[in-house]
Length: 121
Image (cartoon, helix red, strand yellow):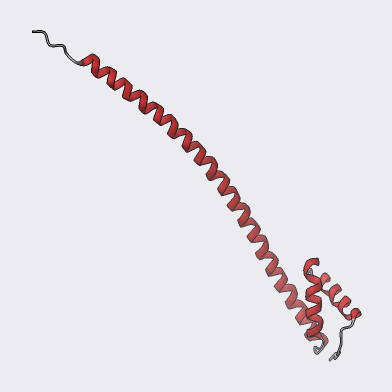
């Protein structure tokens, strides 16, 4: 069992290297090494290795969650873009239908005027 009472820069660097070896990202390594250093002071080598493995697994799960979130955000952006394009096309279709409706109304009005029989007395 390793017992230390104060922070040792060499120990923290060893932990950082261990975290790098198990695939922990740079941006998390410093904070995790600081926390793991405080925890590891009272751990045996096997317990330290188990804690390091746990940190690596937790980091992998966290990374997968981040990647899934990024995919969802990209998918959402694509859906918003597609819905915007669809909305624009619907607006164009609505304008075309209004023009056609107006044209049909005029044609009906003209047809009715032509069809009225004139009364001869």
